[in-house]
Each structure stands twice: as C-alpha cells, then as structure tokens.
Amino acid sequence: MPVNPMNRREFMQKSAVTGAAVAAAGTVAAAPAQAADRKPQPAPRTWSFSILGTTDLHSHVFDWDYYKDAAYSDKAGNSVGVARVATLIQQQREAKGEDRVLLVDAGDIIQGTSLAYYYARVDPITGKDAPKHPMAVAMNAMRYDAAALGNHEFNYGIDVLRKFESQCHFPLLGANALDARTLRPAFRPYTVKRICVPGAPDIKVGILGLTNPGIALWDKDNVSGKMVFPGLVEQAKKYVPRLRALGCDVVFLTDHSGLDGSSSYGSELPYVENASNLVAEQVPGIDAILVGHTHVEVSSYTVKNEETGEDVLLSEPYCWGMRLTVFDFELELHCGQWKVTSKKAQTINPKDVEEDPEITRLLKADHDLVVKYVNTAVGTCTEDLSAAESCWKDVPIMDFIHQVQMASVAKGLSTSDAALPLISVAAPFSRTADIPKGSVTIKDIAGLYIYDNTLYGKKLTGAQLKDYLEYAAKYYHQVPSGTKVDTSTLTNANNFWDYMYDTAAGVDYEIDIAQPEGSRIKNLSYKGAAVADDQVFVVAVNNYRANGGSGYPHIAAADIAYSSTNEIRQLMIDYVTSKGTLNPADFAVTNWKLTQDGTPVF
Image (cartoon, rainbow, N blue to C red; front, side):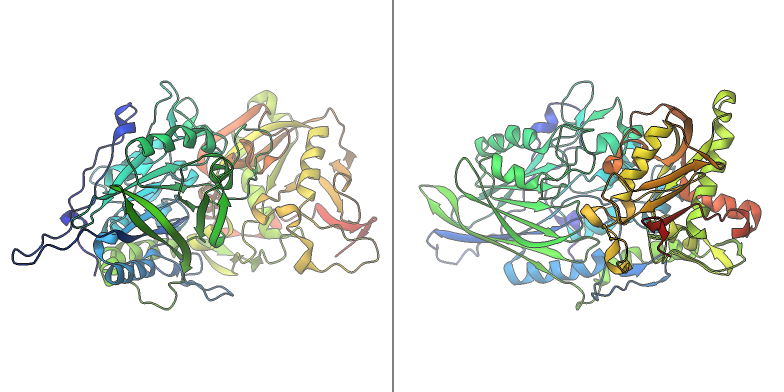
C-alpha cells in the first residue's frame, strides 16, 4: 500500500510568474538514522538509483473504457490506468529501496476520458466546495516527484490547470511555458531532488520539464496573450547549464515532445513539435530524457550529443498507463563528486499485476459516479450508426457530426455571413464508435467525438477549400486503376492518422486514389454547380483544426465568422436531447466518394 504522501518531508513552492519560480527546488527525505551502536561504515564509492516514468496518462485511473462501459481491451491485450501502474511502482520501491527511487511524468494528465471531462465541466474542480481532481488524488498517493506540462493540460483553460496544480503535492514543470508579458516562467522550470547516500555526499538530481510549443496553436483561445511557448532546444540550452551550476550530478529531462523531429503544424510555428531527439543532440549535459506526447512505446533509445559525444538515454512508455519506464543509473564517487558510470532504460507492462488497493479505495466512488453519468440516456436512435467504414466511405454517423456543426454555426452567423454557403469539415476520430438502435446515452456520443474540441466558423475561398481537401486526401495510399483496394492498407499514408483526416459535408466531391497526391480532388461542386476559385464559404470546423492543428493550409489564417466555447460533443448531446430521436433521414447525405480514374471504389 502506498505511503501517505503527507508523511514525506518535501519543500514545495507554489508556481508563480516570477523569477523566484526559476530557483525553486525540492528535496527528498533523508535516509533513516544509523543505529547508535552500529560501527561506522566506510563511505560508499558507488551507488545506484532509479527514475520511474509515465506519460500521457490522460486521466486513466482504472482499467476501464467509459465509452464502452466495460473493462478496457485491445488486440494487444494491454491494460490501462494508474491503479495498476501504482502496483509496479511499489514493487520497484520495495526491491530497490524507498530512498533510491524517483517518480516522474511527462504530461497530458487531466484530459482524455469521461472522468477528466466530468471534473472539468460537469462538477468542475474550480467550483465552490469542489472535489479534488482524481488524477491529483492518485498521483499524490503514488508520490510523484514531478510532472511536465502536456499540451492537453491547457484544454480546459488556465484556471482549471492552476486549480489542478494547487491540488498536487509535486511541481508541474514547464521551462518553456512563459508569461506572455514578462517572458518569465509561468510554471516551475525545474526541481532538484536529493538521493541520500549514508556517509557520502547526496546525489543531486536536476529534473527539467519541457512542454510542447504547439499549445500556442492548439489552445490559442486559452493561452493567447497570456502565455508563450518557445522551443524545447532553446530553453534546455538555458536551464541545463543552470542545473549543472547548481551542482547536479544527474540532469534528467521530462519532455512532452516526441523524439523524431517532426511537426504536425507545418510552418505555422518556428519550433519543432517532437524535439526530444534534437534536445539530446544539441544540448550538452543531459543524462536521460523521459519522452511523451506521441503515444508510442520506445523502451530504450540512445542519442549521441554532437558537442560532447556523450550518449543521452531516452525512453517513452506508451500512453494511458500501458507501460512504466524504469531508468537505472549507476554512479561512482570521484574527488567528492558523483559521476554517472552506466545507465539503462526499459519499459514494464502492468497488465499482469493487480490494481493498487489504495488507489481503488481513494477513487472508486468518483469512478462509479462517472459511470452513472455516461450511462445517462439522452434520446433514441432509429437505426444502428457505425463508424467502422468512416475512413473510406461517407457514412451517416459522420453526417451527424456535420449536421450539428453546421446547425450550430448557422445560428451564430451575422446577417452578411449568413448569406454565404455553409459547409462542415470533421474527422473520423474512432472507427469503433457506434450509436445503437434504441436508447442513446452520453457514452455513445462521447465515443464518437472523443475530444473536447470547440466550434469555429472560418471563411475559405473555393480555391482554398480545394487545397484543404487535397491536403486531406494525402491520407490515402495511391492505388492505381485496376488494382483492388484493400482497406486494411489504404489509409494513414504519410503518417497522416485518422484524427488528422477531414471529410467535408455541404459540397460534393470525389477523391481519386489512383492519382498522385495534390491531384486527387475531382468534380468539386456546391448545389450542382462547380465551385469557383473566388467563391467564399463559411466552414464549420473544430478549434484544433481552425488554429492550425495537423498543418492544413489556409485555415489558421482565415477570417473568423463564428466561434464558441461550447464543446462539439455537448452540442451533439444537446441535439439528441432536444429532438428526442436521432434519425439519419434528417441529415444523412452521400456527398463524397473514393474513385479510381473516375470509377467508384465502393
């Protein structure tokens, strides 16, 4: 059973937009005193300790799928949730010693499940006499030492994030999350922990947190004018030397940023989205990096620093609590200073251990409350609506999203903009989504629209709209005419994933997958007439895409005709609630299709 976090002796300083945030540091509790009658032991010349890492937990506490109302399952047999991870962590502490283990997270904590949504919107943690966020309760009980800010930490606004921060017994780190006015850290950049070595100097471990520059785009509505997010490399170059100057024997980074050097936002930002490998290459003085953001498992990966030639160790433990990374460090004492002599990393799968009973005791009631909430019926559906073929066919369940988006935008347009043609774009977020015939619950709709996106109306010309759809069409692999189309290998070309692929409603068009990228959109028309290059449309689109997410052309810079703080998911729930019955006859229209040299694929 985890030790009560309030029994630890740890210096904590509240985050503030001041220079004082830069200097704040934590400490680890001292080792137990030696028995009075024990003979003095020679000072050890070597020592070992471990840093355990999680990332992209996305408010998965238990091994449960709120959208399916059942235990989580996937083809790989994974489990999810920090309740199981907590058991692995306790095993590591028992095997290695409580004073030889640190615990760190790489961000995306408070968004991602119905549990997260409930405590941000339904019974928000910012309300009067509000409960603590379940993830704060869980992570405090697990005794985290630090966590990096993820981009999804900003989804519900800065007030929710600050409230969550105040509930945590560990610092949220973000060396590149700066106050927009002062350009000083808005959160603590780093913390320094001490590993106590009896009879020898403590080992000082500097933990630097870096978040994703994409926040400036993806959550523009929440952070614009309040915070700015420079690049990871730029800020690491500033703070890693500072940690070494403070006498840190080990410098450890927790980055909410992948390790392949890619960016999903094209040229919209000057900073790389997935920059952990670049940080390792370009910033001397780093021993290891816990990587997050990209939801992949990278057990152990080594990058050579181009200035020092030293190896930097990186690891990414998948997401949702599916894995735990274990970094093991060996050190030797040389002239009174500890030097890292070896380091290794591995990921551990928690699927075969039991959920921690203390986490269960603390959060079972919260979990049960959310299960009851998502099973609330909001209406009925006249037939089963499945998203299984939504990535290559125009199916009614996607038209449901389009209908809600267009109806909501239409209500908020000015008189002049209301005269413009209105269309919608949306992505198939989940191929497993299904709204059943009969009773429709909150979880059925939440399973279709899994993100907490809000709604925009933006203006695009006909030429820009075609560019937009051509960009979306790169999602498909090229399949020459006469070649059979295999849907299992058709999609996700160019690392362009389902959530990045937009279809459109309100215009008719074909996607010719026999053609090369950039030449696939054919017969684009509006109400039977070919779309003119200078024709102006209002496009209903979610805030992520409207602000530049996934790098679509034109949309981020387009004029705004409408914006709302209401989540699209809630608008869909409201639609069903108000109508009482979800009937695809009210909105289902087949307006796009895949072709090969003009011949329909399906």
